[in-house]
Length: 306
Image 1: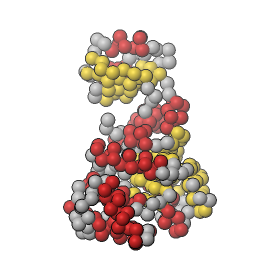
Image 2 (image 1 turned 90 degrees about the vertical axis):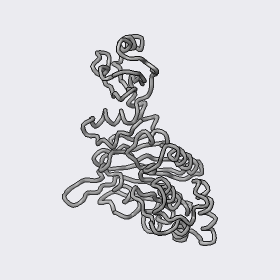
Image 3 (image 1 turned 180 degrees about the vertical axis):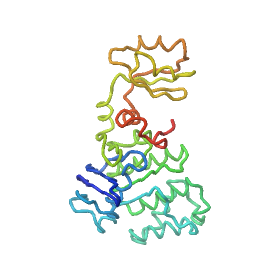
Image 4 (image 1 turned 90 degrees about the horizontal axis):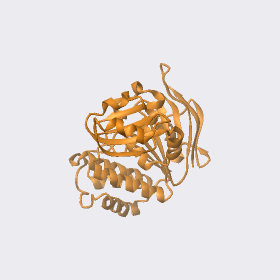
């Protein structure tokens, strides 16, 4: 459906925002465009939407170069909300629906989506009266009312509590099941692991990792262990049996040296920690990214809280 082939974009001053990116998104697939803020994700999205033109390379949708004609079959949830704060929910959504969908169906579609997000009966509420989470729901509904073939979600979980994050995840996966092609753009790797079929991991405009989520993990997998514990686990990183460790309060993800077994490793922990869980795991996407680009290059907002 969507094919992005070797695109480049350089801004004035010589900043290479996107440097040789290629990927494709098929129907019934969630593609994660991941990376820290400033990595080139939003520039890529703007080129797909034909807001910006790539300096070189091509972007096609169903075999044709993207242009004004493709905008009617693409839904876009921007990171920054673009709602009319003084308007009511009902008027806002009916307006957006009328731009791309027959008016006779708009009211029914709006009612259906409001019910799905538990906003039924709130049509007369003004946007400015809503919580950030409910504003995000309205913005999402505006992006999908016209039943797009390709849906681009830029930081869709912004402002949502955990319960509504799960609701959004379920809706996105339902759209995937219905054959929609979905781009999920985020710097929160924990969310991407749960929802994406394939990922492309950006750093400084380049793709540093690309492939299916399982494939990427298997490619970078090693003797990885997940620990949960009570106590101070900072000492783990200095153990002779450990090649790499990401230590957080009460849990850690550890790469043991290839020859080290759990039977050898666990006794080194017991004098210092009360273990509540230990299991072999595939490395997380965050751990892989840290391993590739170096911890010092990762902005704090890229590290999602557990």
